[in-house]
Amino acid sequence: MDIGIKAIGTNPIKTQKKGVGEVNCMISMDNIIITPGMMLYSDDNGIGIANTELDLSRLL
Image (cartoon, rainbow, N blue to C red; front, side):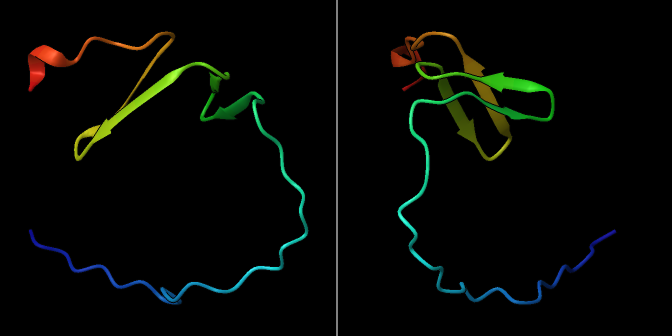
């Protein structure tokens, strides 16, 4: 079954630049902990997370 999805408020809203933020910190999303140095790989099918850089040359 084809289902159409419409989004409300798709125009970006300008933010206030307060100069706050963090770099090189740990984040957690859906019980997955991502730390600095981890590599994230994604495509149309999903996302993969690795502790080190993967050799993807054979996929090209």
